[in-house]
Image (cartoon, rainbow, N blue to C red; front, side, top):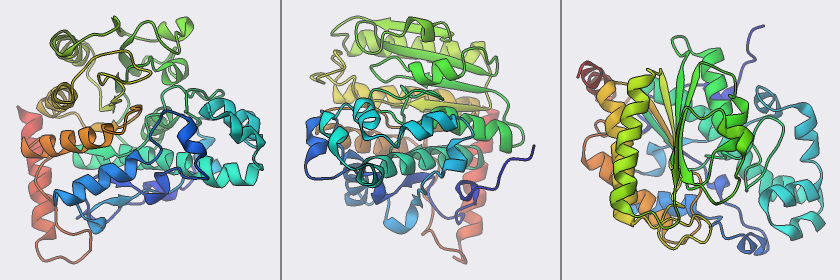
Length: 357
């Protein structure tokens, strides 16, 4: 059966940075979003910090498109998508009880549309990563959602979807590694890829917190269970060792990196004690390992429940850029720029040189 045509795989102009975002990512409605510890506007704040630092401009980033039902059905069951038409189901998944009392058309527009758009962004970023060597979706990382069950603020299985889209639609992509460094176990993608030998999962998480999904743990090929209050030195040593080990053990065609910032010291749900500098270094470790092997890497931002996480994510992206791990800067996102072809060739050359190292 031929895959259906999707707007998510239309190529953006070559001059764009492979950074995916839409203002529709941000969740704002009557202050109800404040009832969950998650900062429901963090994605826009990340973009604003990157603009302030002159790394990007609106015409330099790829505009995310909302995933349609047809896109979502690549992974999700029709039964599950129908369940989301009940506001109390969405309230349970997002952990915002008053959502249960809102008319579902409002819930669809104000809660699920942002999450569908972020999901579309992750799918788009998967193809961009293969094309450009790396991509960052400023949202996404809904790693508690599987094909037929949501939870933990995760309503759509964007990581599973991005990988399934690549397997079905992109020649040469037949193996994937998920590196999940959010503070919580990524039980959604683990359930989805339980018996799939094409997908290798490394997961480092606080062993004592949600979701504690023993069944899903069987899918983890490299499990790093952390203690309460784990600090930078021990954490970074384990990340370095296990990322290198994972990529030596299994050679993927794409790495999906779930870069949750809920490992930050003081996070109300994560229970770990990593500094902002430790998070920046962690992301650097993953990108160095990927780029030195010439393996495309897709990063999603996932959990992070403090107001300062947006600044830390922006600082991490700036650090990756300053170290040359994101390739050269691209020109404005418009066709026909006189230097565009050369810049794109240079970027491709950067990636192929990394592949040869």
